[in-house]
Length: 413
Ligand SMILES: [Zn+2]
Image (cartoon, rainbow, N blue to C red):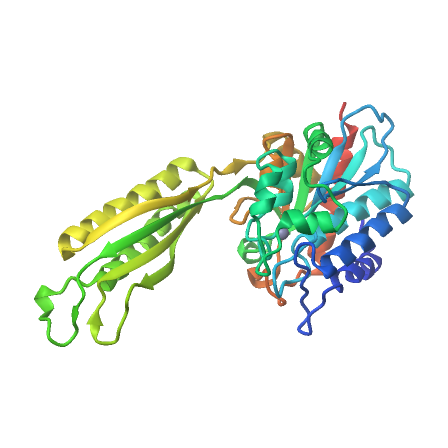
């Protein structure tokens, strides 16, 4: 199906402009007045179009386009419309709007399809306000319970649980939404890549193979505080110099494992009791390792431990590694990847198989039903920033593949 780009962008802008910032970006933190306004506008658009809309009790929004056989499990498409602070327009919203648009065109042009097609908009995908990512889809997937929402507190002391209740929602009433998600035939999410791979390859479509999972480590290095003038060089036990060696070692480990799509970096470095005239005695580092291959992730962690041991023994400092969090990478469904590839070939669009470095709602849905993700390029790989930008031709390509995919899946018995 071909996108009427001008008309689509006009409707897209109506929602994207809610919470608009002066520099062309937008800000719709989860359950903020702007997010609530955008949710209401979208719900109105869906109802106007004649879809059966369900305001699910825990905050997701569902719209259904009936198929020839209403008894069959539906094909799901969706993403999120909340944003980070000072965000771009396309993260999340583009996937929701293209899904809506495909359903609208299928309905208006009376294109036959056996299965129902449903749009699902997950709430609170971003962690910007409540400090916990993809919590809406985690709740519906049964990965967390309503208690978790009580623990998600914003800077003003408001819990996500209370924010939902204030909207007349009931975060304890999870079962209807969970059942609907569980019983879906498949789930498709289109999203901007949020990285530079597709743009640098001049490829309009990315087919996500797996969503990377973070493993986070805290490393403490203890040396000896000493006077930075009086202590001779050969007697120093400099914790920061040891940390510097580890930072470079982690980069080397990440580069080495990048052939397996892993990445690793020291992302935080803190000195305890730092002072201009004191040799640092205590450094605390944060390390973020991500990948889609568990063995490769494990090798990165082992590499960090080995490097630290070596640095400690040559420099006479002590070091300790703590694994702060450890998530498993999520594989996308081979059936969905194959179906997306067929759609790309049918539309004569080049594609690239790739991992997703960022997390998405799709990773929570994947254990429940066949799940696939389509990426399209964004300018310079920039996201979570007002400079986020997508070429209309890439939106058109994404739409062709997504709409083709929905029809292909909806034909299946
Ligand atoms: Zn997103």
